[in-house]
Amino acid sequence: MCTITVNMLTSGPVECKSADPPRRKPSRPFQETIAMPVVRRADAPKTANVQGRHVRHCSKQLGSNELLVGRTTKDPGPCEPYIHKHDHEDVIVMLRGSFTLRIADEDVTITEGDTLVIPPDTVHTPVAAGPEGCELIGMSIANIRSFQPDGTEIGVGFESLAK
Image (tube, rainbow, N blue to C red; front, side, top):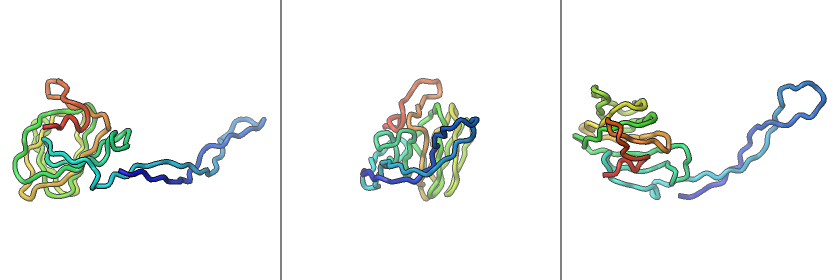
């Protein structure tokens, strides 16, 4: 991971000091310098877990305070069951292939270009990757918590996916 510094030109409020009645404050451009982490694919942490081969692109350990983003590659065929739910939304964007999940009691297949938003407290499990396998991006808040269907906590963030 490396960090780049960016100079941003933004608009911000300017104080109006006058005896006139309060009115909307005008804004003027000002410059702000921020540091942004860049996670190079070669440097991104890679793991094999219950979801497949996984590359972490965005997490607290990689400089993001609010988001968790990972890319997962699955081989064709059935997936190891991982019946769970989360305390926040879980978003999956399919990049390649197809993937079937059981959500509540319904099998849902998503294909290239589809986005699936799994609501909080919705029990789900992977079922199978299609005949060509699949590649997907999973996203959530940084501190998403995973639970078994009975409410027993499994873990927080990527750590809940350990084999």
